[in-house]
Length: 129
Image (cartoon, rainbow, N blue to C red; front, side, top):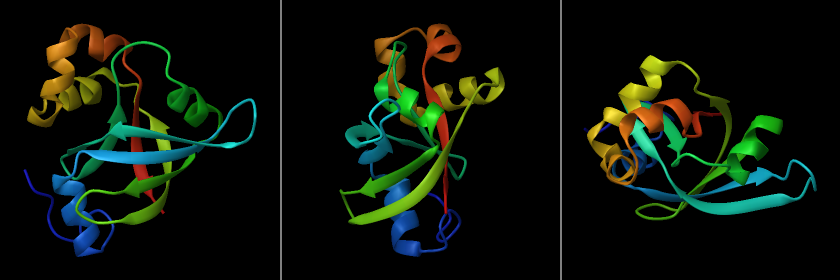
């Protein structure tokens, strides 16, 4: 599903990248060190909302975002852009299940049972500044 042009950021070229790209870098602030930490990660565009998740288990990026919700979202595939954003943990089961049932989340489902993903995977929703 493609995002409606301009619906997420108001910038059609960025929104088009959010609709089709898969891999980004995110920069967070280290929860212990206070240093900038950059990691490559996948993201999901579901119903004109942007999510970052992973398989269950401890994740430094997630712990960093729980301590400080600011991040830089680095698009690097079809477009190069650095977007400032905030991340909010997604705790409600209905949203978590909806995200993991989305066709774009097939890789996660191939690695881990969907009920385990819904119950235990780290997940944040990204809101761009």
